[in-house]
Image (tube, rainbow, N blue to C red; front, side, top):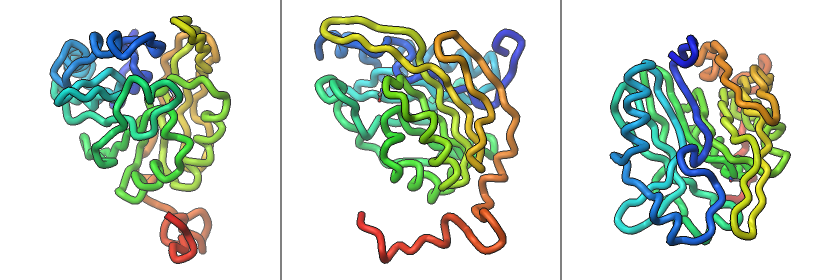
Length: 237
Ligand code: ACM
């Protein structure tokens, strides 16, 4: 229950527990946690009290490597972490690129996939998750470019999946960096319809009811299926 609202899936922004702008690898290292650290503990408690599955970003450390990750937590249990594959800008100085496969998690009968922020610009991520059966994409973000929300319309339409892009608002100035986040978190439907659009600069919680099973039908008309109509022999990898 969040201010009287319940949800089966709750998506929080990228790096929600630390902020996004860092001044040194040392600083990032000091905020890194394992998947059973304080942020995991907080989300486990929240999942227990709300009954929600929760996806939210944190700095993960494992075997001496530091990742820009998201926890996937359900009913007081850490199911997995997703480690961002496509690092943006100075993230390359702080984080190792993700080294886990793109997984789809069946949780309470819903097939959930995860990507983080800049992963959106690589259509292969959403496509791979869709090919693996994803119905709903959880997309923690700290967007600073103005293109993603519009692009998610296409990502959802071309894969016929739902997506929840949870974005940061406001500004962070640290060291040489001055980031203004684009807000406008968005829930997008399988036909590219924007089901919920948050304001650009104000905190926002929005709940949308969907039928996730609609994402299993890849037909866009009587004759075209966006997955099985692909002509893969013409494509480069
Ligand atoms: C981003 O990937 N946080 C822009």
